Image 1 (cartoon, rainbow, N blue to C red):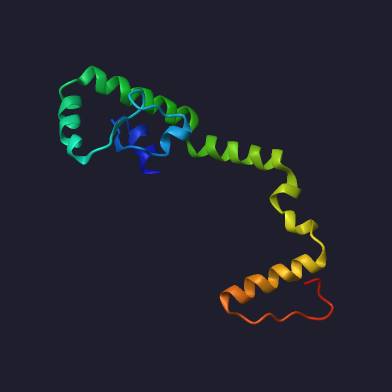
Image 2: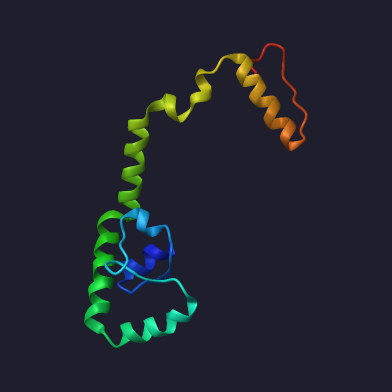
Length: 125
């Protein structure tokens, strides 16, 4: 969340490497600046404070990408699309399990948390 807020504000993100934002399509040197050793942070900050064109290039690219691909609305739309594509069976596979497997899952869950299992004779579980 904070990563998106920093980038959307137009500020330059300087963050530790490795990180997960690369999996979201952000590239080091294009959308953010990365460091591997904490001793590199202050020199990086000084370098980018003294190089406004480069700082602006990176921060503006990041801002554009966040506002295009990572707003709440776009992320919700993407999530809803994935849910529709996945279908109900993939989202709730236990609904198609036989009763004995459901009972076994109840037993496993309740025994793992130390709660007694109370099941009525006429219930599915």
